[in-house]
Length: 267
Image (cartoon, rainbow, N blue to C red; front, side, top):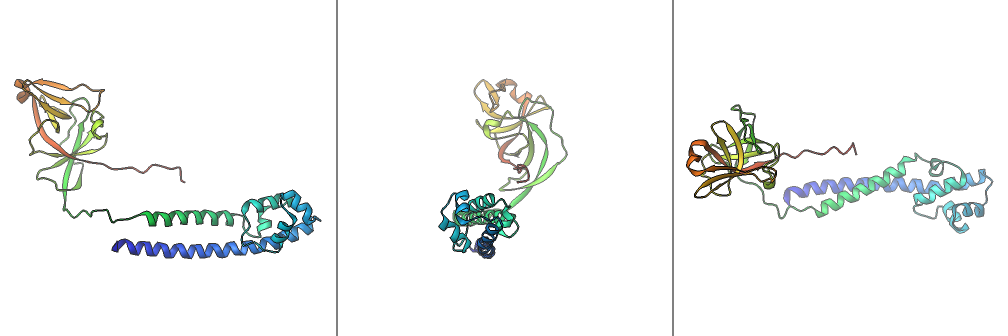
């Protein structure tokens, strides 16, 4: 993983620096807590035993907090101390209240990042070394009921590997081929030079004007253009009239998809 190693190293370096900063800030907070608890307890004319009873802990535990004997005081304990003393969390911590929550959240995210880095491996990924070819994408082809839908102007170009000469793309309209994983808005890549065999997905023109995307089947008596969705009926034509009524424009050789990011509400 020659290229990825540098990325992992940089992220690890940043992670370690952030963790050092977090630990230093937490240490300062922890050292201030004991002094603040002792001061606030005296201001409230409260004994260590009374405070311990309100917090729900031993007197010795209060003394150890006041003496800064703990490396880090859990946030749950700080919240109980604040409630027992009738003060805000910021008065106990002696710093901006958000700092503790922020450091905990940053620490959690850094741990997640480190786990992702460790679990991510490119050893089983085969790089795409094949040349990409730009092909034109025309108007929409119905994956539903045959209808006039294909425009001659080029909407865009897409780059695909191993594109046969003369290949082009058509945007899909409808859901009759959903069973083959072809959805509304996808771009099907068409090879106009391939012969259609049973089971191939083809773009066909019916009666000179109605375009459709369907699976092709042929037997001794009929040609069937079949959808991949039970909500649609197949187009069945007698073999003797097929050549007059239907023109196979090309055979589908691939599907080009674009994935849209979901809006997560700003989270």
